[in-house]
Length: 429
Ligand SMILES: [Zn+2]
Image (cartoon, rainbow, N blue to C red; front, top):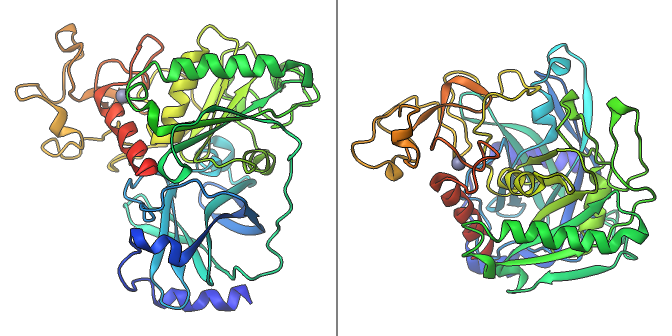
């Protein structure tokens, strides 16, 4: 039934104008619909397959910003009312698959599959859902179509992990007018919950000590889910160390020692779904330097390293505001992540294909040379500094140093700060 129903959408992509603020209550209930998917392929092919549909108790997003205006992420999901074909919701996001698809393994034609979830407000009437991917030319290509009938009795309403205690760390605003953060711990035993709470307090303290989070603290709610692992610490494959950590966080993602990801998406989502959330932060109970962050997915940071506060805030920059890595000297696993001649979607990296129309041009003071020389004369100036996005040539960053560039930076640059503010506004207004 689903497959037949999706065909109708193929010819009617442009319908009536997108949904407006007043439309939330007409189209959606306060619950969330979680679409669990398997996303697989190699460097040149990808497919989505439905795993299951789930109903979750809270949709924490804005009720006025239903349609995405941030234009970030490798992918875009759009929801259409099946009766009128009007687009009633959209969101950009990125995936582990998209990163993995640029690795040597994927380029060699080896295939892998990753688990993903898309969370949207729960529709009142039948909808179509379409996932599109950015092509290198900038256009969107359809990867997946799905028809969902909210009356479908297969939508799973089982609540998992309700036994985990929830601690409210910050409560400033109603969920639809706040950025709702959920913090999960990985590799904390039952007798380490006091440590999880202390680690969360310390790292949140570092985040809200930095602009623009400092000035915008009242737009955030934070809830900690006391996720319990059977064993302490996280997996470290190159040391042959495998822990029974609930959320599956592991060093050496894509063979990069410091890169920490988890592929246990279903477990992460089941643990997070007990509270309202817009963004997931995972604290990995480990000492070694490491972390990872993917736009719209999660930010992970180890907690006991001297640089943990840096990693925590840097990775949240990726996952919350879609910021790109401004550095270009560290080892990564990606090939051609930013192909030549294509402007990256990340707000803080530019290929400067047109030097008269740089996306942060309004923040560059008159008289600043563009490209900007890497000279102490321009230490605190917004310009276009060559070297960004894992490439010493052809990609440019906004300032000489930034929290997205190096551990030495104690602040986000003005371009990153503005991108974060825009993300806060989008969620909280
Ligand atoms: Zn920056």
